[in-house]
Image (cartoon, rainbow, N blue to C red):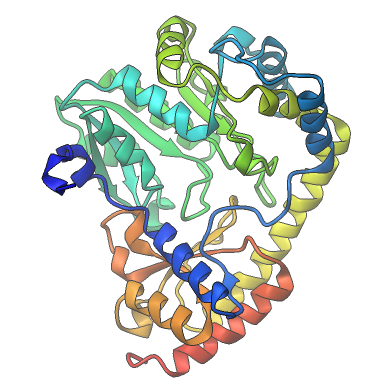
Length: 392
């Protein structure tokens, strides 16, 4: 079928380059190669057993039908309880919208807030799908160049510099993908105050909350009760394939969000919602905390190891499970280097091109979502690949 029949939005939405890297890695594995995966943002740990058992029980009990579009009441209450326990926030469960993954939460927000031609400011680098959801609703992402001097995060000064009459919202992420940096409570408060001055909506991606190291993350709801905050069961709770997330919205937005959810996807998977109730139990939380410690050990190994190889990583990430490495000192282009590393030493990495435009060709994202032993092997292989890298 000729491609000219597809809409312009499909042409404008860029492919998720890490998926191409993963496909190349899978093809090499099928050919018998041993691939070390440091490209994909998926924890290598299986879903904690208590959650799996709850999911199995949900299936056995026949929980396979639709739920209310906003989610099971018991799950919405449990999520509200998490905000009380983790952040000291008294949250009305009626403000919680359960979604099929954090991606669906972003889709709902985009459809709710962004008219055709309107803009949302976000940091560059950032998670690529954010800007593509905006394109889907005929909006536009304004990519604001950021660097280590601001922790790769937006600031009020940057927002005011790039703001214009067509902008309607600001999207921040803490911890951020691909950099792993956090916004402190004063920084979140400053963003919130800036948005109020500009009459902008504040959207904060908190999908990696729970996965922080040596510091507790502050929720945007601690400083901005009117913010839109999204989260997910995928990262801290290890439920990537269950496709379950949530959105906390101002109370007045919930009826409109419910209408959108009913029409876009009806509801999140029933059995996944039942399983997620077990995520808040003590047994599951203990497992998740052990895994958080394992991620910190991996970070503490990989960060100095990559620096010794010549990668520049000016900030120690405080959350998530990524290192965003500047390879300018090694010469060449990051996409070409990633290709060289996988073809010569069978280590899969993600080029910076996925995350925006600002200095993308000189950055690579390393995901420490594999075991410490495999990371050690990966560093050895990358070191060998650099020895044969023409630009070195």
